[in-house]
Image 1: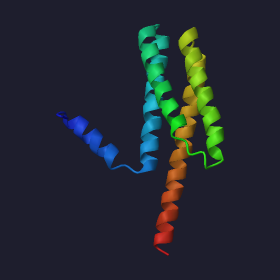
Image 2: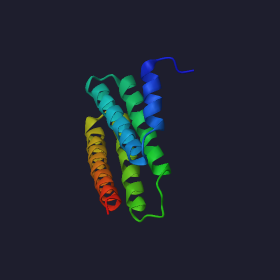
Image 3: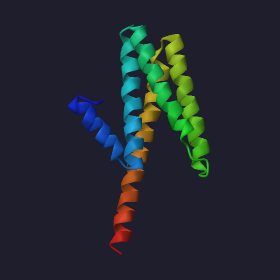
Image 4: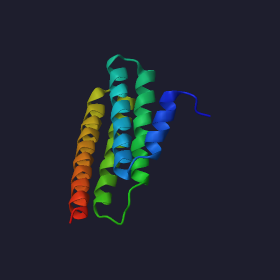
Amino acid sequence: MISSPYDKYRQSSVQTSTPAQLLLMTYDGAIRFCRGGLDGLKAQDYEKANTFLNKTQTIVSELIVTLDYNFEVSKGLASLYEYINYLLIQANIKKDTAPAEEALGYLVELRETWSQAAKMALAEDAESANG
């Protein structure tokens, strides 16, 4: 049972979000965890780095699994996600921030792209509703 008001709010926001909002929330989590991993690497706190980089990998793996391959863009996204996971693994193994920073850059760019696409789709929906 959920007792914390924050947890209740978070559960409610997930349950009432659109697919686009859920995707952006997923990217937000990946970005937050990747930054946490980078912080751990920079502080030479390798346990923290490992925890956060693994969480980022889990999210990226989920993004791969949920791709709809009926769309051509999904193949390219799958390759990019696989590369991001490779970078996260390299950062974790080599204790090097450069691959994690590159992965973070891709995640931030992808989030911005999806955010813009969601805004455009919303504008199109509003325009067609107003006829």
